[in-house]
Image: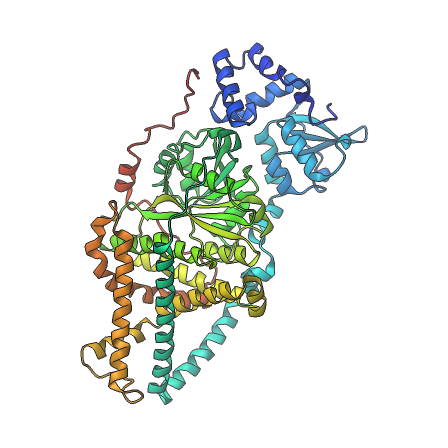
Length: 633
């Protein structure tokens, strides 16, 4: 046995020579791997694995022969289960290390290499002499942890976020109780409408008008801040030896149609594969996606993590579970239908390399690649262009906390784990996390790297998706407003006001949209229900103000798409007036689900626009290229 984690580094030149003498690799393969290892300042084993020169099993066997250690078959000689109860399963997963036996008063740890063993022992803050190393295949170690700590890992995925910052406490309240409170509230509202119809309408109109003005001012300020500011100078490129290890989570659920296209897109990434890990998180019950992935030849820098059955079945729960399987210091998120820019990860690395300590999250720009498919896809693309290219960056420049998008996000791992990852019960876990980051003193920046997505181009699926977002917005607002004074203290006055302005105006505008539409009556010279409360001139002023805000929104939208790749959408900007009312339908669906199904994740089907997806991927290799220059595999 080995009582130190560093035996292989006491003979730094011997392991490569051992691989060559044992016939594990050729001289050209070794030279290439050593050059890459030196250039990237990473382990030789990382290069050998990422480039497909050796498998994990072959590398572990080579380590065993080199270190003169036994290679334990966990299936034939399983660990003592009681020993595993003394260690954090999440920590064991991250380093892929498990306790096996106690020999001569020392705990024998199974690992696939000495570096993982050393990192695990260091994290325990215990004297290394208490431990000895034996080797085992990493897949066997991982499987053992998953099988013997299934309940802990499953529950952890659902409850990583502290209870006072999560909406999971709503599970304690039965749907019948929520339904009862809702029925009483609706009965009271209907009674007031019957007794005082015009007064109630006047109150709604006043609130709708006030929030419309707040929303317009906020959009105008963000637009002005983004357009009037000189673009930031790009940070210097991050040298290869300083590139961080990045793990990107890609949650998949019922994605049979999109799986092959996704793999083709990810193969275009130019980030060094020895410092890249793509983790495909697939639900245990989703045989459709798992079968599709099995038929694909995954490179060694991609791996599948099967998320055990549990509640709730949501994207954030899957990401919480898969997070413990990630090795990177930077954690990224992509969706199944995403087509990220090939150099996106280099852009992320260079921003983080020059960022202050409190900048822990980067949000990329999202565009839609199927904007020519139909009217709905065109309008969705216009909305996204305005939001991600103008409003969101403007809010960031104004020093406001921003709600994150659900993809093209990159986090410093330490901050993400400190906050407990994602709220598994919140169906807009991205917006929630954006404000939790701000509450804990962290910053988010919007960067210029682009990711193509698939616009939801069918009416009812669009409404279902938007209702999920609005329901999540409602949940996020209520969760963070449990203790308003604490929220104010944590965010500060400016961010607190921005939080109120964003959520209250967004939710109010959708829910009270029919009230605002009534002002068109005034513009067209028709009677309005408020005429008995205010003069016709004031109503006309309000109606014209409503029209002016519509014009302002059209100008912002037109500015957003006045780009070579989006100019074909300019002529469709005026039709956005007929697009936004769909959100009102989604808002009422969201209110219904908030009462009866607050944690229900209304799945968006991807792959509807596979023709466009294939066109985008045509520039990529038809197969995942696993060849190494100068190396025959």
